[in-house]
Length: 157
Image (cartoon, rainbow, N blue to C red; front, top):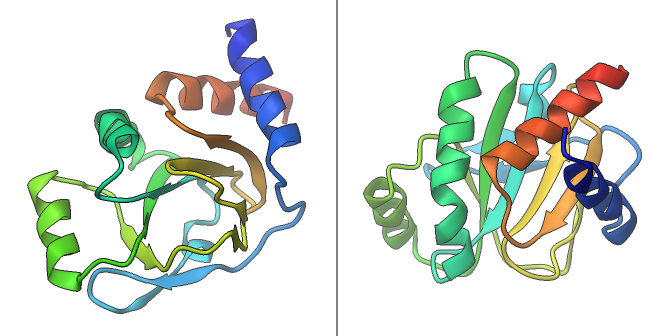
């Protein structure tokens, strides 16, 4: 693995306050039903806070979609959390138009979430299979960096 990838995510652990314990975090999906991150226990969960107006969020969508599609039958799942005040129908149209294959949940923008702060969009957190947040990134993430980080963590477990 590239040393810069490990330094990146190590810095993330220091730069973003990451909770030290598993948590139960539930938000409504696009149908209004409450969905919990706890339902993904046993998998690595990539939680991506984003908004439709965010250009960087749109730029990372192809990588997040590929990450989810290539790993959904294995042990990695992506969960998008829309982090803006937007109408239900407008958000559903955006998700459909972008062919987002992973679950999309909704949250009003807040400074602090159960996973930690969301100081800018996009912000991404990685939860390990026990449900504990282990890393976070503010800004653009790539499929390769996330897969490399998870691979390095599997090797140390």
